[in-house]
Each structure stands twice: as structure tokens, then as C-alpha cells.
Image 1 (cartoon, rainbow, N blue to C red):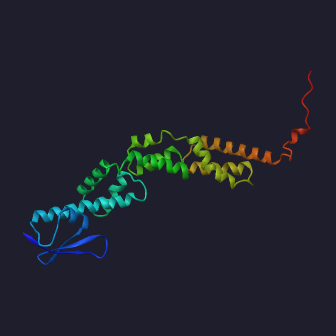
Image 2 (image 1 turned 180 degrees about the vertical axis):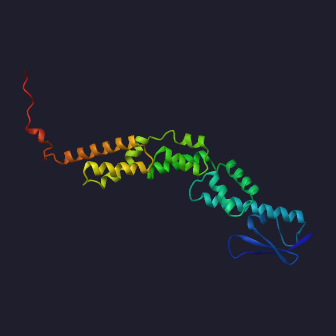
Image 3 (image 1 turned 45 degrees about the vertical axis):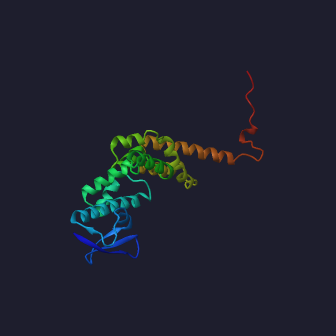
Length: 231
């Protein structure tokens, strides 16, 4: 048995240095120390000390995962790799992931939906590329597939290329087609979809040019034309 002879707050981080029999033994978060009811003068056996250290490790792993999740949703595989790089044991990593899943804080389905929605909004790309990205994040194939069911590649390709087309106003059709088509294919869209999108954008551009050519009263060059006489 050993006696707690000191519970000294560290300068920051809400942690305590625990002294046993006058010597520093280990550090604990104030949360663990409070839940265990530690006070100076209390005697601890080796099993109790080991239990406190394990409890501290579990809390540290959970907190590390929560900090990682605070920036954006993550896949289970992302959190697993993060904890392993932090030096936590494989068994503790598994236990931490299970705890986070049970608490609803780690959900591959929710992560996949977030990833697809975010990409679609800010950086549209094909379903094929999105599926590859999700697989690299460790998302199961079926989960990734479900997240991609609502994807409309036709609209997403158009939205992806629209801003690019705005910077190509002075180019002829050949250059316009090459620039926009290559841009879309780099984002994983098929050749056929890229070609359709190029034609759609070109028609929008031509229509806008036609509107600009209208006279102030809103008539075009067809104003001088008369309908054909009936036979």
C-alpha cells in the first residue's frame, strides 16, 4: 500500500501531479481524480493505482478523438489512425471507437453524407472520384454507395464548370471546349457528360450574347422581318 502525500495542480490543462509516499507517481486529470475521490492521506494498493492509470488513458484517448472531431466530421478509420499516431494501444483505440459510436459521435454514414454534400457545394466532382475519396477515408463500399445515391452528376458538372466558363468569355468554341472539357474530366466526369456540359454552357453564352445585342426596346434583328405571306 502507498499513501497519497500530494495532489499538486499542474500549471495548466486541469491536471494534477499525484505523489505517493513523497515521490511523484503519475499525472491525472482533475476529472479522474475527482471521480475516484482521491485525497491526501488516502492509501492505494497496486491494483488501484493501475486502475487509475488505465482510466486516465481511456479519458485521454476519448479527449484526443473529440479534439480531432471538433474541426469536422471524421470517418472511423480517420480517428483510428489519429489515435494510433498519438501512441495509444490498439486495444484502447478499439475501445475508444466503440464508445464514440455508441454515443453517436462517430458515424461513417453521417460522415459520408457530409463529405458528399460538402464536395457538391464547394468542389463538385464525379461520383467515381467521390467514391474513391470515401474509400481512402476508410468508408465501407456500401456506405459510400448509399451516400452517393442522391447525386445528380449532370447538375453538378454544370455547376462545377459554370465559373470556369465565365473566365473564358473571349475564347472561340474550340478553345472553350478544350478548356472546359479538360477541366471537367480532371474532376472525374465522363467524356460524354463533359461534352454535353460544354455544349450547354456554350448555348447559355450564345444566348447571353444575343440578349446583349437586343435594342433598348427589347427587339432583336428579327424586327425587320415580316411573316411569310399565306399561299
